Length: 105
Length: 328
Image 1 (cartoon, each protein chain N blue to C red):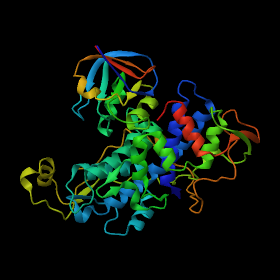
Image 2 (image 1 turned 120 degrees about the vertical axis):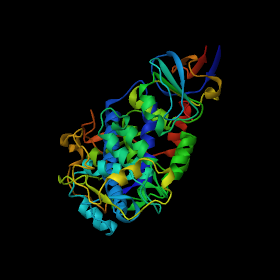
Image 3 (image 1 turned 90 degrees about the horizontal axis):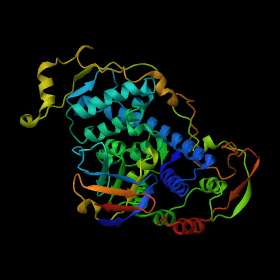
Image 4 (image 1 turned 180 degrees about the vertical axis):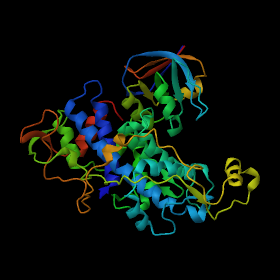
């Protein structure tokens, strides 16, 4: 297991799910999907809405991901350094907004 | 007119304080955020319609198609004055089709303008996340046309638009940068202080204005005329026909002036009632700056008294507060 700590941008319950790597309009979301991205852009808006949680490697508390997730009530951790490089599509990860951590199982 | 750069700073300041309130939402602050964001979103939607209409006038000379009923080759001001007679959703559906589906030349129209029209339409689609006011506003701040921010076309809605990119770049770094580089409007700071945010000094401020007028924007009274979805052939003809897929196919089959059965858009999914939010007063006070420091509203949530505890404007204290809460 590997634990990365970022910043909580949107509160919520601890989420365990499978990582869905952001790939623009070709992103594949699963039912228990957690969107993982280096940073989000407008092409990911619809995928963010479908995800159980959102994790980004970069970005601040006022980035698109943070604002979208707060509005939609989705847990979000930003600035989890290199998370998009450490996680692969389908990896099981835990996102804990309480401490801003992302655990890769 | 709305100072867009200031509105951008204040919008993100409100978002930042919303973050401070995470988990203990205060109704009064929630209402401030909702009212401010809704009004800014309304101004942005009005602007997007005018801006897209202004761009669509170039279609006859710079696109393979143009909207036959729409004024072409006239000044931008003239297009704006005529556009307000139309119902904006059908107009923007046609603009979306025009920008996204047909070939454009000379730096006019095209996909980037299509994104602007689609953002507007997204707001009225309940299944689209852009139907949330804050997401819509955040999205719109980043909209670009072919040569810069979409908000630089005038239209007497926004002013001071040239600096928004630097605000967006700064807020991307961290909150401290935003608050140390830019000055949040005193009125917004006072509202923040009303809600007992830890770390502010409180003081008594007379309250006599309405919060909903914090931006002094009442919206354009759009007309109800529905523009027919009839496209004619523009004078632009692309040379590189080899890689021109879907558009050239249509060129072969359509006549120069199509009938309403040809390229007519279906407006059915947008009801007129959904657009009622934009059908307010046509009055726009172009002389008022967006923020009036003389007083703040007492009409927010539980704040009904004529005098309300409010905080003094102290930028350093606000930044310190952000840092204290671990938000950097």
